[in-house]
Length: 134
Image 1 (cartoon, rainbow, N blue to C red):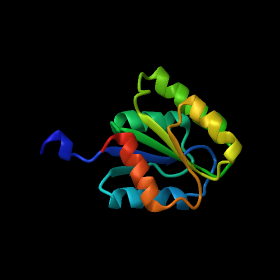
Image 2: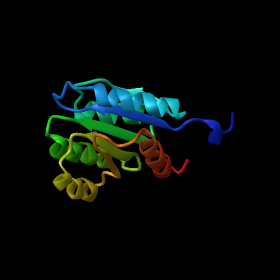
Image 3: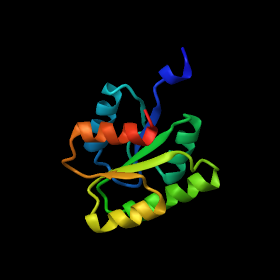
Image 4: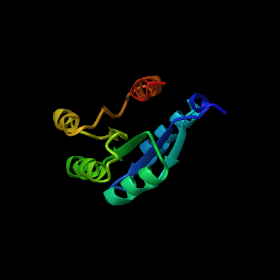
């Protein structure tokens, strides 16, 4: 199989104490249906666990889902860990209940895209494809 036929790998996870995983599982399923290989890490992972898993699984993208309100410091930790591991070429996206006022700060720290509740499945698929240059 040629490299262009191998599906891009995406890691989806929940960082911190947030136990609400419905959105993360939903996005995992729509990305799998779109042809991506998606690794779902489950809930209550540390930033260190997310970054270690992403590197071990050789993913092209990390998607983090939040409902807890701790998205700014946790995203910052993930960004810092990716840089420290020389893995900041991994695209970082987020989703969940994230206030619009925080979007600029997330983009400034390197989060490529943020998907908030109500975004259409096709919109997620199209933006992920554009970021991964599929």
